[in-house]
Every structure is written in structure tokens, then in C-alpha cells.
Image: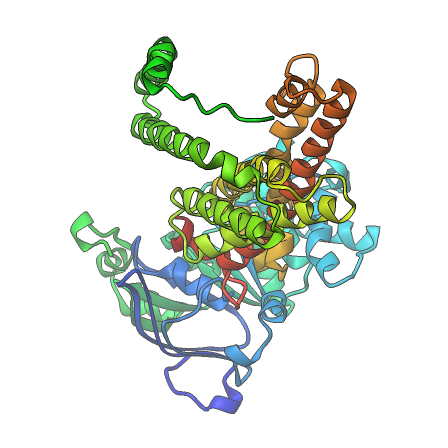
Length: 250
Length: 265
């Protein structure tokens, strides 16, 4: 990961990105080059703009200034729905559609007039450690952890090349957290690019290969995870994750 | 249906006094209930009823002239004026861009199209006596129905923004992402009028029908007119709902299929 750009070869690059809403600046002059493979963690205190950055990457919002490039191609030249299919997003809360698990898993493919076979649906569930019996269960009856796993499987049903995860385990029990982390590792191993927002130091250590640190909407560090833990001592590391005070809030 | 304009205003005022007092008492009860339940509609009730009273008294004084009109163009201009007034009233509650234009277009197309249809098929004569009161009923109801739709869409989008964005994030269109919301809002808009039809003649004896019977029209004929009016209200209202739903949803999303959260917040 580096801050240099060679546009035609740029796998996933953000260039001079500013984002503001109602005159409130959320992101300031973000320049990032994210490599094709591996798991990239976006970390930083609350309110530092991590989730907004993910929303920009899924184009749920557009930058006020700057460009985003995917495989050297400007975001604005890619049809937005096609872009969102290629770049999946798992939100912090599952936000499942009312109905069965099957309905949720078929939702994305149906947009593209694809109907997954029973085998594919079962495979999707297996990837998030759920049994095939879950297919016809109503999502209302699922636990929080199961719902988040269905949400992850729902995104995977679109076969995205990049998967964005916004604190997917923040409100889950240890078992569900471990299942999701294992799924994420498997996906990365199979070639899906993962970009995950997390505020957990331990999850950062366990899961990520590269790190982007945001503070008050600015990128303050881009570093391989291993180097980060060698470069800084425990107290400095905790400082990166420390929640901001109210006065600091954007 | 000849309106009565009393010659002696003093006698009228004396006769009307108990009714005016009753109206004031009922209005105060309404305001009191609003205050008690803290729904903050006291001012709205007071302004609406005062304005409504002045408007209907003014209207009563020119009603004979309007009822005698047979010039279709002038009748249409009066209907358009009524639609504009309805749109101005409806837009006050929704501080969104282009809402007046959207309201005006939906109320006008919904009401005028159905009025024009019944005139073309000669169900109602092209006379002010028929067109203005019927048009008024249709326009008022279409306004209420479009307002219900808007209110419902705003409330449901606020409540479901996470699910809407989840659908968008999968590559879905804004229309699909809010389909269940628009469907529910259309249903909510149609329900009050549909319920009134269901109890027609048993619980409600509508004013138009009663007026016609008093005016000497055959009760069966008056009843059929009333059913036609309800159908006009429902068809015109549904058309208005579809139009307002379409244009408001367009306002709610950017050209990049992004939900304008700032708009509804």
C-alpha cells in the first residue's frame, strides 16, 4: 500500500477525497492506494470517518471532491448498480429484508435476473456456518449473530470482487465473531479483496494485513499490520484506537 | 339545489348564534384534546377552522354566480384555482424541494382527469351547479390522499433507511428498494375513502346525496350520483397518489441512486 498513483494500474485508489455534509467536513484530503488482495483494516477513533469511507466505496454517498479509481477506471464512469454488485457492503447492523433467509439470499442475484440453485444457496450458508435448514426460516426468528451471518451470505450471493465490512462483529458474541472472521479469512484466501472497519485492536491483529488509520477525517497512517505492531509500543497503539472526547467530535 | 341567500342579515345572525357558539365549543374541545395529548396541533386547528370559515362564507356569497356558469373554460379555471389552493395548503406540512409543484401536478392531474372523463361520457352536465361542488369534493379528497401518501413515505423511509440502503448496496434500484413503502403508502391513502364507501348509506348519508334529494331529485338517482362521486374520488385519488409517489421518490434519491438522508432528516 502506498500513496502513489499510476492511474491505469490503480487497483483501488482514492485521490484527494473530501467529503462534507451540511458544511460539516467528514473526510479531508484522503489519498490511498489499496492493493488487490488481502484484508485491509480501517481503524481509528469513533467519528473519524471510517464508516463514511466505506459508504463512499460502495457509492452510497459521493465525495464532495476527489476521485476514486477501481482497476484504473474512474468510479463515475462505472454504472452505479454494477459497481455496487462488484463491491459488496455488509453493514454494522444486518438490516435483513422481511421474509425467509432464502428470500434474502436470492435478493441480490434476482436484481440481475439470476436464480441461484439450491446447492449454491446451501453453499452460501455453509460459508457462514449455517445449516441448510436455515434457508426457509423467517429472519425475524434468528439471533443477532445468525442475522449478521445471513447478511454476510446475502452480500456474497452477488459474488463481489471487493467486500466492505462495517464493524460486522461489533455487537456479536464470541462464537459468531469467530465464524465471521473465519469466513472473511477464507474469502480473502479465495481472492476476494476485503476492507473492514473495526475498532477492535484484537480483531485488527487477528484479521488484517494492511492498516489505514483515520483521525478526525484525515488519513494519518497506512502501514502493513505486522510493521504497525513492531513500530509502535502498546500505549501508542491504544492511542490510535482511543475514542475521542466530545469536544473532538466532528 | 338552489342556495338560500337570506335577506335579513340580523335575523340570520340571531338564528345562527347558537350554531356559532356550538362550533366554538367543539373547536375548543378539539384544541383542548390536542393540548392534553401534546400533539401540538392547536395552532393548526385554530388557523384552519378560522380560514375555512372565512373561505366558505365568501364562497357562499358568490355561489349563485358560480353555479350559473356554463362556460367550460371558466369552470376549468375555477377548478384549477381550487387545485392550486389545495396544493398550497398541502405543501405547508412538507418542507421539501419542489413539493408545491409535485402536489399541484398530482392533485390537478388526479382530479381534473377524472372530472373530464365523467363530463365526456356525459355522466354529469357541464354546468357549474354540478361541476363545482363535485370537483370540490374530488379535489379535497385527492389532496388528503396525496398528503397521507407523502406523510407515510417520509415516515417509512426514515424508519427503514437501513433496509433501503441494504437493497441499494446490493445493486437494486431506488424504486425496488422502496417498493413496499410506496405500496403501503398508497394503501394508507386509499383506506379512509374505501372505508367510507363500505359504510355508505348505513353509517354515512353523504351531503351531496342528501342535498340532491332535498332539491327534488329522485333518491335512487341521487344515490347513484353519490356512488359515482366516491369512485371519482378513489380513481382521482389513486392517480394523484401514483404521481406524487413517483415524483417524491425521484426527489428522495440522487441520480446516482443514493438516498438523500439530509432531505428527510
